[in-house]
Length: 636
Image 1 (cartoon, rainbow, N blue to C red):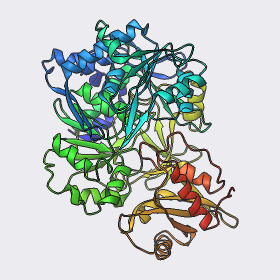
Image 2 (image 1 turned 45 degrees about the horizontal axis):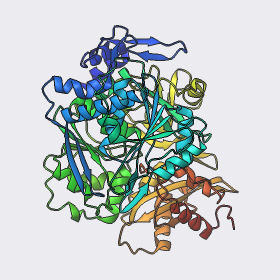
Image 3 (image 1 turned 120 degrees about the vertical axis):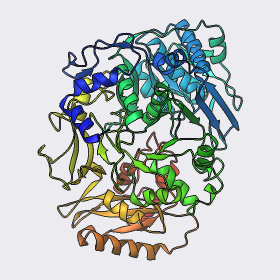
């Protein structure tokens, strides 16, 4: 197949292109209107089609004779449990839970909040909601009560599904107290809470408030009659997924059912080159968009085997965890975040723990979630000798904007690039006035409307915020808020969020470019660069680095080396103000470095702890580093 021809057709004839993709799925009513508009003037895909995503992901495969194939492998090093679940078994579990939710009054259009750890029942809960046409909103398990309460009040669910606990490496985290505190704070508590009891920590079921009653998961499904799939319109919301907003209130990204199903199925072929029966492991969490798309829905729609992994890349039990899972389950394609591999590299820089593992089934490694810096890319490439595919997308899009089209026509890899625009996405680089930039010139990365199927049509109960956040700045385009450039060959280089560009004496400098160079130093495991206030130049870059495990380089010597390197390779204007060595960087639970929090700490030591942070003590390490160089406003 020819990528250029397929891509061009998707831009010139989007309705025809996506009509062909839609025809590959098992619809109840095949759509005739491929691209239309809703009352708010937004583009909507497959408006007269009807389908059910639970049917596509489960019943369809059973009808095709694949019911005995493994759908889900549960691998939990934190509990020592492993379990293989066939498509037939998964369908039966989903149908029973759907029947139980129906008995609790859940009908099409109702919302259900899911607050679960990485267990198969989280997948079952999502698919059970889809089976009824209920709209699920998964909240990352372990989020603090206030964050859960905010999401409950925005979604206003009929039911909350949770577990008695989650497990963080060797620590049991009871969920019941967190849920109770959240429900005490909410204005719109759900009528019922369903609790999955785990043997590591059982919860006493009693009324958490005067409004909400509690039901045991197993008792609910044992008494239920299995539910059949409920046909829904293609434009019916499948889920709401909350992402951070600049005002502090999270934004509820809405995902349509039909467009999402079509886009995910296409992506499994075009990007990941996977067929029914292939094993796909996405090392993420169902609480994030990557988990929604590539742990749950895409692999199951495609008829693959997906892995639900309850563990960490380096602590369960060590930095060889990835290699063990890849070998044991014969994984064909592996998808995770660059941060995960940086953590592995930090603990095992020579990849000694990979020795003896049979990785012959592994064909490709995919990275996304944050920028894949060239040093990390080079390390993964050298130790695995496999294609390393950087691809770029957002919570809002639900699937990749740019990638190497491995299932269409594989292209050469370019370190630092997310490769080529995926068919359906017309990617342009614009300046502040909306003028297209020539190859090599940095600017705002914008997506020309209409967005392809699978992308958000609006925000939950807040269409005005949707317009303001994404469509207002660049009329006729979706504003990604990321910056970058496209080279002469059409490859996209994403340099980071536009607010990660700093202004030094009138010169706009990319912190991503500086991070690339610092990360290339043999002593550095990972790094972050942010702009700090400077009385003379407005801003100056400052670096924060984490050393590789066992590295003994003198921090002062390293600072001099890195300052000299940045000055030599970029210019005197990019001189680093300081380089601080820290034990850890602030990161989200999905592995993204919290650069915004680091920037805020350069101005004020009293910064709110982000809801998504993995380790709040990491902020203290930044405070101490800033105090040592006299940056920031320190508190008592």
